Amino acid sequence: MDELTQIRSYSTQQIDQKSQELKELSFQIWSHPETCYNETHAHEVLTSFLEKEGFVVERNFIHQTGFRATFGTSNGVNVCVICEYDALPEIGHACGHNLIAECGVAAGIAIKAALEKAPNKHGKVTILGTPAEEGGGGKLKMIEAGVFDDIHVALMAHPCPHNIPRPPLLAKQEVQITFTGKPAHAAAFPWQGVNALDAAVMCYQAISVMRQQFKPTWRVHGIFTNGGVKPSIIPDKAELQYYLRAPTVLELEELKSKFEGCVQGSALLAGCQASYKYDTGYLDLVTNQHLASLYEKHATAQGLVFTTDKSVEQNESASGDIGNVSQVIPTIQPGYSIYTSESNHTRGFREAAGSDRAHLATLTQAKILALTALDLIFDDNDKTLQAIQEEFKATFGSR
Image 1 (cartoon, rainbow, N blue to C red):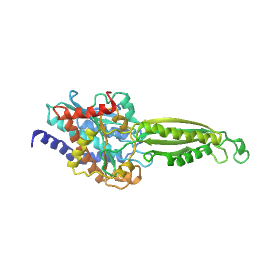
Image 2 (image 1 turned 90 degrees about the vertical axis):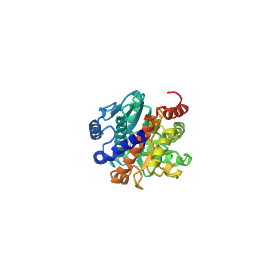
Image 3 (image 1 turned 135 degrees about the horizontal axis):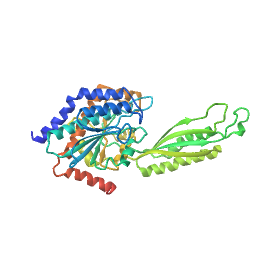
Image 4 (image 1 turned 45 degrees about the vertical axis):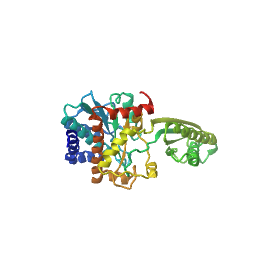
């Protein structure tokens, strides 16, 4: 066994040795769910853990609940492993972000161990704590602040029902719609009112009817957030919140045009005024194929079997601000099974995310990400990194 093989083996052994501590770390986050930008407990336990492990930790980094933990030298390859840790309202860690945090920390520990074992090797690992993925766009503000400027690649793994090495993450746009009418007594003088709720209902129905003309890869889903204050008052204000998703930003613009027609047409029919505001936008994930191939090599060696059913990949498509990162630096975000048939964003998936099987699956993912990173750090000729960067430049140009 050559020296580098020994170092790789030693690095992944550190994950096994810290299995119980990592499990407790994940449980601390899972059992204390916090929504976007409120992840104070998760921030505390993660940063304290990483400080104990010998990383240089910057707390309250960019965001009050963001952090950056680093180890190594700046004159080599800088690999970033990303942690997420925000939960969903009411249903907690039903997207398994406690596991994403555990995976990022565990992979970082393994990479650090390898760098320590090979003291003459230049390289750096950055563990980035990114809050508010579930609608807050925490990574977007980090991109704007230049956090990724000195990072060569970004790695993250996301739990889901199946093993999907190159998942399709859709571009997403959030939109808030407000219809404004005129109040009146609903029994005595209803003809004097202009019903904003009627406009909102027609808008919801128009969008549902329009689905026949939506492409199969488009996704549109919304809720009523304000439908009036009392049945005896004609609602003068009604509000909807929608998420629009499509495989690319260009397709998303096409979808938005159809969507806006439904909004304006409904307002016209009800005699209301309509306004809409687009909020946080997520770009589609552009998986770096060279980087994904490295991941697949190590995943296969670890015994993972990937789904070959394209319909499964399509059905499990979602969105995330990791897509924005992927259009700034070479990135992968494979999906990995935590042995449940429950889909993300359900109470069943939340329970699975707190299970022992999910923990063990996450440790395996952490090893795969760490070994993928070490392929770059231990490549003396930088040919692997060069191929990854050339692919990125061919896709996006020089940035």
